[in-house]
Image (cartoon, rainbow, N blue to C red; front, top):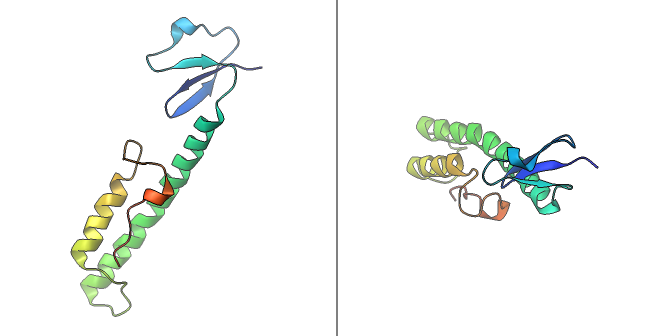
Length: 108
């Protein structure tokens, strides 16, 4: 079995000769990556994809509002700008990240 170095947000495989003396603060040497860490990394990657997809959508909404487009979704320019700030901040370290249930909500 291959050992792994794990930390709060990730892991890396190391060879069997890897010494625990080489660990950095916050790292551990384990034989198997905990499922909870795998789930966290998968969820973080999904949220990063969501965030990157949401940014051009917000830009399009702001442009539609600026143009007075009747097809623009509800919300004021300020609400959409505040939403953009929240989406940009939705990253590792944000409260409840990466729980999709706690994403910033679009203006309504």
